[in-house]
Image (tube, rainbow, N blue to C red; front, top):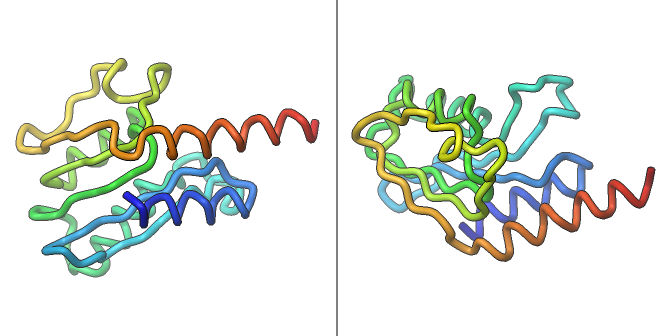
Length: 139
């Protein structure tokens, strides 16, 4: 999760919502990503989506079986839906998103995907809070 937080900090520095993700296979990071929605003018350029693409490119296939994604914020409905199609083994996230997260929206994950929540939750949440406080103060 610390590596995902580093990605979130990179997003923060770029003026992106600070969400970071990494994907690990056999204790090796195979993908690193952060939000790029502003940079790319693309509402789908969430950290998780970028990580899925990078991991698939690395593996040479669309399925991420045996992989774990670490992400600083609970995935949204879109990212959780995409994770279903990747068949990723595990999603580990930091801060919960009670308004837009997949848990409260009852988004179905792949039946074999395990979920762990609350890892470094305070650090993940504090980075997001700081970002939005600074954004409000600039406007």
